[in-house]
Amino acid sequence: MLLLLIGVIIKISRACAVDIANCPYEETVNLSNYASQENGSIFYQNIEITKAWQGYYDYEQYFNGVNVNVAMHLRGCVCKFKKCVKLCCQRSELINGNGQCITNIGANSSHSSDFIMITQTNGEFKKVDIFNHFIWQMGRPCNRVAQFHSTAQSNWSLLENGTLKIRRTEQSMYYTTRDYCLSQVYDDHGNEYTYEPFSCVILNPSWDVFIKKYGKQNRIINETMFVLIKSIFTRFLAMLISIIFFIPTVLIYLSFKELHGNLGGKLLISYLISLTMSYSVICYINFTTGAISAPACLILGYAGYFFVRAAFFWLSILSFDIWRNVKENLQTGIKSHNKLYWLYSLLVWGVALLCTMLTALAEWSKIDSCWKPGIGTKHCWLDVSKWSASIYFYIPNMIIFLFNVIIFFNIISKINHLNRNLTAFCTKRLVQAVMLHT
Ligand SMILES: *[C@@H]1O[C@H](CO)[C@@H](O)[C@H](O)[C@H]1NC(C)=O
Ligand SMILES: *[C@@H]1O[C@H](CO)[C@@H](O)[C@H](O)[C@H]1NC(C)=O
Ligand SMILES: *[C@@H]1O[C@H](CO)[C@@H](O)[C@H](O)[C@H]1NC(C)=O
Ligand SMILES: *[C@@H]1O[C@H](CO)[C@@H](O)[C@H](O)[C@H]1NC(C)=O
Ligand SMILES: *[C@@H]1O[C@H](CO)[C@@H](O)[C@H](O)[C@H]1NC(C)=O
Ligand SMILES: *[C@@H]1O[C@H](CO)[C@@H](O)[C@H](O)[C@H]1NC(C)=O
Image (tube, rainbow, N blue to C red; front, top):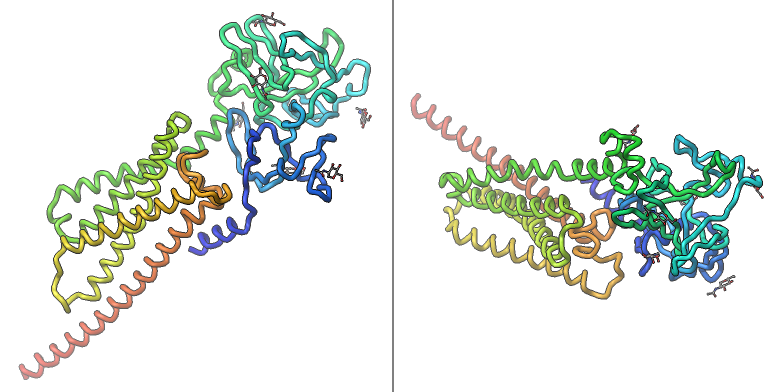
């Protein structure tokens, strides 16, 4: 409870992260260390980035579009103004055989050249100075990068706009600066340092030279894949296990009249059904990322939200009903179960629908995009890492949770009270009985 509260406070106190409009991630650079001018502009390698082209990001994007959450930091869309290439290391460094950045001892020698051959749009080649023709970003597409060696089957060329083209006999592939980086390497034959591309060996069919070199599959399934699998399993295995247990429980309840005949049983079934539905939808969304069409994504997202809300409300109704039972017990008779059940159903589904509609309204309204739930836009489900999720997810859940806690303590005190009355009543009867028989 306290943790939840702290989490929400932390999320709220953080600035609102918004991606820069019309700017893909790979066109941005980290501007944390750059001083801002009086008018808000920041200069990156002599390119002016105005306020409109700056934004706060709480993630970094790597090879194949894998996002990794990091501390909030300022980024600027510099590659909109001049095309970028990416270096694996600092300009004065190069990458060694172990993938570490080390000082490039040949950097200022006559054997070193900042020139690289680019392929122009018209297909012609041109030798350009990297640092004049391009803006350079720094970073790697993944931790373990490997150099790409041209072969008869596949070779690389750097396009005018900084995209790396892998020309293969079957099909060419294009890598943006998100997916490759350049580093100088020493070429024995020419006795010179030249810039060569590096990228990730994993999940990458065109890096076939490396797949052959490293051979064993288990060494290739690494990093990106590993991160992906880990996140899927840690986050959704628990849900899957729950579904596996819920479905039989619901079925058992449904098949025995003794179990679902009374109101409590019905409420429990309704709760379990909502929970199973919500878990199923969320699992489905998360296990089939990328393959869901936009309308399906939208429908699934809101259906998931609806059932999550419903599950939480059913849980509240469940505890409310227990409280009502304890309170009315022994006083009034049992009211018509069916009538009450329909009333509860109407309440729960109605309020869940209302919440869903309000969330959808927020999505389609004109508010700042960082306040929006984001269902069906970038993700099918709420982006729970975004702080706006607290409005639509954590805060409502917390309110319901609080309600349940209050009811719970109420029930406990009622039962205590009842017990005391009962004890007193029994003692009196016992005394009477004893008196009668003496
Ligand atoms: C951005 O740059 C700053 C300063 O160099 C660094 O401390 C920070 O870790 C960087 N953030 C990311 C996400 O790369
Ligand atoms: C912002 O200020 C810098 C230097 O102070 C100047 O070079 C630049 O043109 C200004 N940009 C705008 C949009 O006014
Ligand atoms: C190359 O020259 C730059 C300045 O021109 C200097 O900062 C750098 O340390 C030199 N690198 C080496 C390896 O000598
Ligand atoms: C390799 O590049 C050359 C041009 O440099 C091109 O003519 C050749 O077709 C390329 N090979 C493959 C397999 O694409
Ligand atoms: C660069 O050019 C290639 C080929 O014309 C194109 O496929 C790619 O989308 C371009 N990339 C950018 C960032 O403009
Ligand atoms: C990637 O593979 C290397 C050995 O090839 C291993 O040491 C490293 O831990 C692996 N990384 C991950 C994230 O599995």
